Length: 626
Image (tube, rainbow, N blue to C red; front, side, top):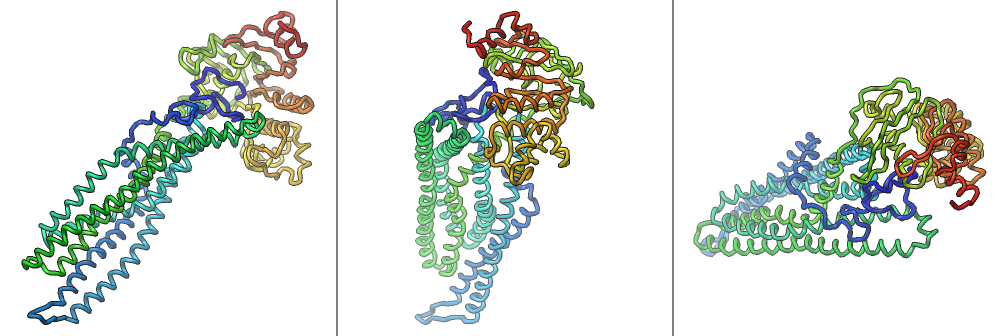
C-alpha cells in the first residue's frame, strides 16, 4: 500500500520507482544492497535431500519412467551384444602355421547380426530421447505448478521481504536448468547404471584379472570427483544467487524506469548492473572452468585404463590365456564401462547448476504457506468494525501500533490521517489480515477476524490503492477482476458508476481495448477510475481507499471523488489520505501519530481543537508554520 512500513523486516530499500504494497522486497539472500550482498550466506547444499526430492518429482510420471527403463534396458542389452559379436567375428579369422584361415560363414553371420544390432540401437535411442523429453516436460510442469501454487499462497510478509526478481528467477531460470538436466542427463544416468552392471558381468566372465585392472580407473574417477565437487558446489551456488540478484536489479530498474530517468540515475543503475554482472561473469567463468576440467580429467583416466588393459591383455594373449577377439571385446567393454562415468563427469557442471537451482526452488516450496485457521463464515456483513487495544510490529521491539483502539459503525466513513510512517496503512493490513495482530483483537460484526476464513473476509472488502494494479488484459477483463462471473451489462454499469465509461467509450475498441503492462497506455486518473469500477463491481461491504487520489491532478481528483462518493454510499469506508480536501465529508477523522490515536472528530471539530490535525491542515492549505 502507499504508506511505507518503516519498521517492517526489510531486506533492503527498494530501488527507485518500484511499486510495492509494503516494506518492499529484499535485495538478496543476505539482505545487503550492494552487488556482493548475500552471496556468502547461502548454506551448503544438501545434495542428498535435493536429489531425493527431484527423484520424487521424476517418479510422479511413473508410466513414462517405466517405459524409459524398458527402452534403456533394450538399448543397453544391444550395446552389450555388439562387442561380443565383434570379438566372435575376429576369432573366426585365425593364423595357423603361417597360414590364415577364415570361417566366412561365421564372419558373415556375426556381421549381419552386428548390423541388425546397430540398427535396432539407433531406433531404441530415438525412443529413449523422445521419452527423456516427455519426462523432462512432465517433471518441470509439475514443479512449476507446485512453485506457482506456493507463490500465490505465500504470506504477504514473505513477498514484502524477498526480492521480486529473485522469486521470478526461480520460476524461470532455475526451473529451466532442472528441465535441461532431466532431458539430457536422466537417460545417461539410468542407462549408465545398466551399462556398468552389464559390462562388469561380461568383463568378469572374460577375465577377472583384466576386470580388476579396469577398476583402477573407477577409483581414480571417484577421487577426482570428490576432490572437485566441493569447490564446484560453492561456485555454482554463488552463480545461481548472482543470477537471481541480476534479474531482480533489472526488474527494479525496468519497473521504475521513469523514476530512474527523472532523477538522472541511469549511470548509477548501469554501474550497479555492471558490478553484479562482473561478479556473475567472474563466478560463472570459475564455475564453468571447474566443470569443464572434469571431462578432460575423466578422458585421461580412461586412457590410462585403456593402456593397462592393452598391455596386460597382450601379455595374456601371448601366454594363451585369452584370444585376440576377447582382447578386442574387452577393450570395448571397458570403454562402455567407463563411458557413463565420463558422461556424468562432462555433465557435472550442468548437474551442479540444476541442483543449486532446484534447492532454490525447494526453498520457496518449503516456505510456510499463509495460515488460515478461520472457520466462521459470514454470509452477510453489516460493517461494524472494532479495533480493540491493538499492538503490532513488523520487527520485534519496534512497535508500529501501540494500544490502537477504534470503533467503526456500519455505514460510517472513517478517515485516517497522519504523517508517513505513523501506522495508517498498517491498520488496513491488519483488517484484511495481510498481517495478524500481536496483541488485541479486531472484530467484524462482533466476530474476531482471525476466526473468519481469509477468503471470506477479503471477499467482503474492496481496496482502491494509490498505485493502481492493472493486468495485460482488456478493459472489461480488468473491471471484471472484481467479480469474475459478472456479465457485460454489470461491467458497463460499474464503469458508469465510477465515471469511467466516458473515456472508455472514446477508445477505438471500447471495453475490448487491450491494456499494456500495468495499464501504461492509460493516464493515472483513467487507471484509478478503472480500479474504482472494479471495486464497484465487487460490491463490497467494507471499502478501503488508500491514497486513492494523491497521484492525480485536481480536476481528475474531482471526477474520482464523485466516483468514490457513489462507491461509499451505504458502505463502511476507511479512507487513508494525505490530501485533507478528500476527507472533509468523513463522519469521523482519526489522527494517528506514532502508532496511537491522538485526535478524533469531524473536520470542524478537529479544526476547533487546534491540535495535530489543525497543524496538518494549515500546513497544507494555509501555508502557516507551526
